[in-house]
Every structure is written in structure tokens, then in C-alpha cells.
Image (tube, helix red, strand yellow):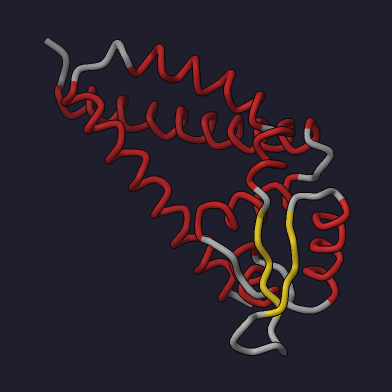
Length: 159
């Protein structure tokens, strides 16, 4: 009979390998999706964050994506606006503020079909899981995302 502690250690080591592979493939997938929509990876991430977290000032968006609030975010917003992915409007309450908003229709038209393919494949796989397995998968991925967010924030605070 195999030693349960060595079996667990091997399974945990394998999970680390699987997670590294998943993260690398996710980054490469996002880059390919971005290119298919005429963007670079950072630009697509910015649009995705605007869609998921809502409109933002340029400074807020810069903080979300980890850019400097000056020239880098301005250049990104110029590219995204020219490509039709975002709009910049004045804040109604404070005309000095600019609010950046993603245009969902553009996102869906240009990169939606790519995501539709992977979504269909994921849906077919998820249909094979039990409710308990789905619950575990959701919790696992939510925690992985939270851990990654926390680590990104920590890395950004490090000089």
C-alpha cells in the first residue's frame, strides 16, 4: 500500500505544475484573443477590467492595470478610443474628471466570437460535473484569482 503522505505530496506537486501550465496558457490565450481583436494584451485586460469593474477615471484604470497615471495610460486610452473599444467623457458631477467606459458592443463584435468557442467547450465539460464538483471548481478558481490579485498588489508595492 502506498504511503498516503507521499501520495498527497506528489498530488500537491502535480497541482503546482498544472497551475503553472494553466496560468501560462491563460496568458497566451489572452494575448492571442487581444491580437485577434487588433489589441495588445494589456489593452485587452484594461477593457476587460472596465467591463467587469465598471467605468473609471484614467488614474483609477491605471491603478487597476498597473500603469503609471501619466503618459502610459494616456497612450493606451488613445489606442483603445481610436479602435472603438472605449469612450472618454466628462464626469457630469465634476467636469474636470474624465470617465473611461468600455463599449461592450465593440468588445463582443471583435473578440466575442473567440471567447464563444472556448465558452462552448467549457460549458460542455462543466455539464459532465456533479453539482459538488462545480461548487469546488468555482471555489478553487475564485481563490486562485484572489490569490493572484493579492500577489499582484504586493508586487506593485515592492520597489
